[in-house]
Image (cartoon, rainbow, N blue to C red; front, side, top):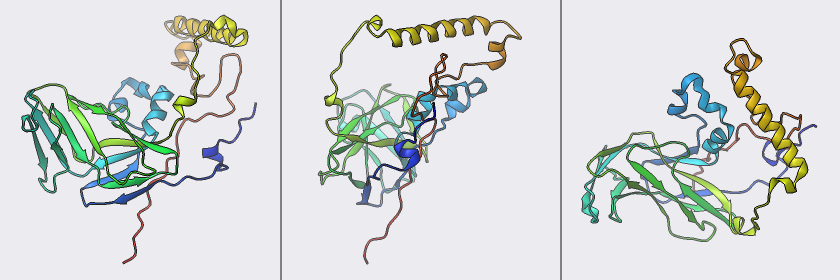
Length: 261
C-alpha cells in the first residue's frame, strides 16, 4: 500500500495561525520543541530513540526557553516566602514564589492568539524531567483571552535546591481543538469482537515473543537486528502499512515581525 500524503507533510491542509504578542522583555523565547534529550542520548546505544511515540511526543509543540539560570529551595511551608528563588543574572526576575505551597511560577511574556475554537495546552517540556520538581499543566482559551498565563512547577523535595539551567525550556505549548476530547464516545469491548484486529494482534504478539526468545541467541537474525522496527516503520508483522505515519514532526519556528513604528 502506498502511503497517502499527510496534511503536514503534503501541505494540502489549510495552514493555521499561531501568534505570540510579546508584552514584556523578560528573557524567555519560543522555539520548536527539540527531538533530542540528554538522558536519551546517554541511554545504551541511544536505545531510548527506538521508542517512536516518545520521540514524536518530544517534538509536539514549542518550547518556552529561559535565557537565565534559576534555582529554588522550598522549606515545606505554605507561605510564598517559604520558597526561596535565586537567579543569574538577577534581573529582570523571570521566576518567583507567587501562590505559595512550594509552587514556582514563571510569567510568560507573550499573549497568544489561536484560531477560533483552539486552546493552548501549556505543560512541562515533554520527556524532560527536572529533579525535585513537577510541571503543572494548564489549558488556556487563547482565541479570546486578553490575559497572559503563567507556567508553574511544584517543588517536591523540601530542603533541596532545584536547578533550572540557562537555556533550559520551562514550558511547552501545543494547540488543542476545543471540545475535541468531548466528541469521543469511549467504550470497552473484548478484542474477540473484532476478529481481524484480534488476528493481527495475536500475530504481532507471537512474533514479538519469538523475537525476544531469539534475541538471546548469538548469531540469530533477532540478535543481529537488535530490535524490531514494525511500529517505527508504520507497519505490522503481517505486512500492513499505515496510510499515514510520522517519524518526525515539522514544527515551524516563530517568525519575528516588527510592528509599526
